[in-house]
Image 1 (cartoon, rainbow, N blue to C red):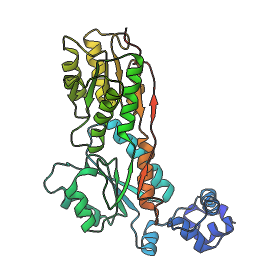
Image 2 (image 1 turned 90 degrees about the vertical axis):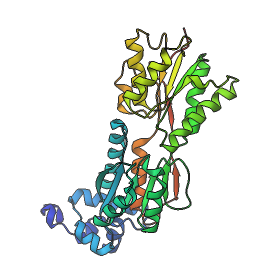
Image 3 (image 1 turned 30 degrees about the vertical axis):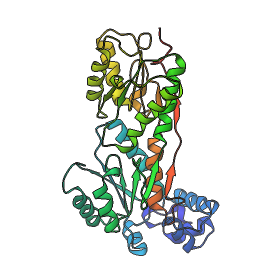
Image 4 (image 1 turned 135 degrees about the horizontal axis):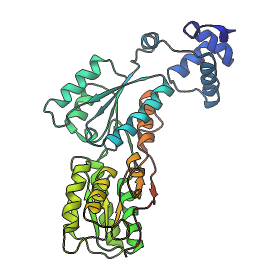
Length: 339
């Protein structure tokens, strides 16, 4: 029996015998090939776990002519967002026997497309996960298409005819948060917009305006400030909004980092949250549960989105070219009716 073997000596034959399937079936599961039932896959994965079998990456690469590396390409000022992305991608890589290669870059670099294509070829990557704002850099997308490099765009601002995508409905989510604040009785609702180069985040401003229009509240551009997705930009925007003679009674920021910046300004100015000012964020990162008070926010399934992106690349035949995941409004301590 293979259980007594060293884990390095356990073979595909042992896994097949333990699972009661053919060696070819084990190979199909390891290579994420289609036409394998979930029941069979579960049996093979249980045998792999029991025997502590470790696939040989080099052998897999030679057999399938595919690399075992997936590159995560990012340039984002929110550490909390990136941590969730990395955890989700790593979970999926573990599930599908891939390795994750983080690749930070400057999305404004003039030679960005050439850099990324070269790195993908150098490491013989099985595919790339592009996070915002890279998922909206047209020159990069075109270069990947021309070079036949597989990729998944996370939260792209606009759809494309090619390539895989994973996203949520940012416009609908922001509309629901603004509706919630309006239903509490707020009418002067400030909005801290997300980074202007993040296409999908721009939809959050549209959702904010949609909700105001639905309830007959006039859109006031002086209540909107342009943020950059960072805590510091949230502080700057919060200062400008709260120094107005007629300050807002609620502020909705397009991510949790900026909402935390607004909270900081409120505390410095001696404003009680939520008694004198309601504050809401977006993403439901760990930061939203670490502030005081804890943030009301929109739970974007960041970790699940990254998992789905890797899953799209790992599957020989993805279920759908475009996958849209749900969101959830999470009410905590930072919002209440205006006092």
